[in-house]
Amino acid sequence: MAEEATGQSPVELGVYPKAQVLNRFIAKVIDLLIVAAASKLVPPVGVLAGLAYILLADGFGGGRSVGKRLIGLQTIVPRTRDPAGFKESIIRNLPCGLAQLAFEIPYVGWIGWGAVLSLEALLVIGNEQGRRLGDEIAKTQVLESGQLDVPD
Image (cartoon, rainbow, N blue to C red; front, side, top):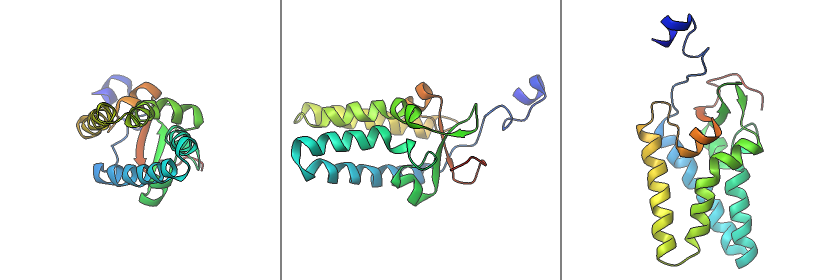
């Protein structure tokens, strides 16, 4: 319908098919393992290192965290067709960062962490472009690497 109204294809309008959900979950698990390892290194500093990784990870390497790079995913800004930078990474990962901070509070924080990650997972599954809350706020989308020609 958008194509009929504007004469442009969905890709020209910045609408891309979502990345495979399983690949996104595997990439997130890899990233969360890195966060868990960082958190255990030196207790107070490790928690901050893990939080920094969560917030900044998609800004490195052309919109690819370590997990995304290993699985073959990339975070982009569809409107500009550019890879996500540090600004977009911080904005899109703020819900996960807040959940990670909450995780440090026994029991209540663990429930909050699980609730936030569950909500984000449901949004990835249910959204047509696979955009979770953080993606909606940052105006980003995760695609399969190579799906869109963007610089690294």
